[in-house]
Image (cartoon, rainbow, N blue to C red; front, side):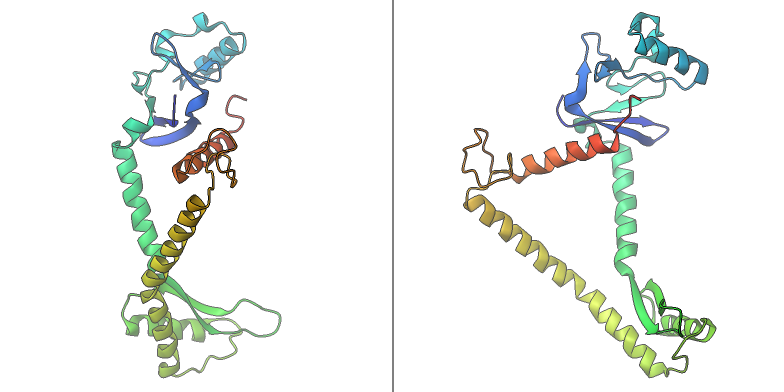
Amino acid sequence: MDGVLRLIRDDEVKITLPGPSITIKKDGTVWYQGSPILGITDPVKKAEAAKAVKAKKFDKIPSDAFCRIGKNPNGLELVDDAAWATHPLKAAQEAEAAREAEIARKTVTIYLSSRGWGDYSPCEWVGDITRPDDEILAECRKALVEGWDVDNKNQTDDEILKKISTAREKYESESARKAAREKAEAEALQRMIDNGYCFNCETYCHGDCGNYSNDPAVMYRRRLRESAREANYGIEE
């Protein structure tokens, strides 16, 4: 099969398997690298099934332990790319990732002061730069006053507010800088395509590899499969 296969249990993706290593038998059971994907939680039954798999005596494994694409009675859900595209868990993961990304985007570090001899870590404020100035100012002053071995504790409000303002200006201009980076990356990608770059063999082969592709998605999909294989290396051990 193409793409990847996700194994879900208890609303959590447990394993992601590369599609090319997956075989679906005529009875619908799903196999990975010649072994069946099983949904067994009981330790004793799992050990017995492992012995049967190692001996290739698959008929010794309970039929309800075998898995098929979709939800299985044993509690394991197998989801291909098409089903994953509209899966509620994917939507939840994307929403959480977006929330965390937004928090990370707003979180900045403000350098306040160096410290004394023997300690190279600076005194800094780390937090949400979109909060009001007075709140951030109070927390910065607390960090300076309560911090250990701070070199420059006695800073004026104006000095600290200037640092806050600089950090906020940098944060507010990040969207424009990101758009510029993305534009430059897109233009570089287009230049590669225009100059005969092959995303299948990842060289400027102009088709000499025999399987030329000017679609960057070919490269991204291959890297995704390689990443999945690396993440799940040793799964059958």
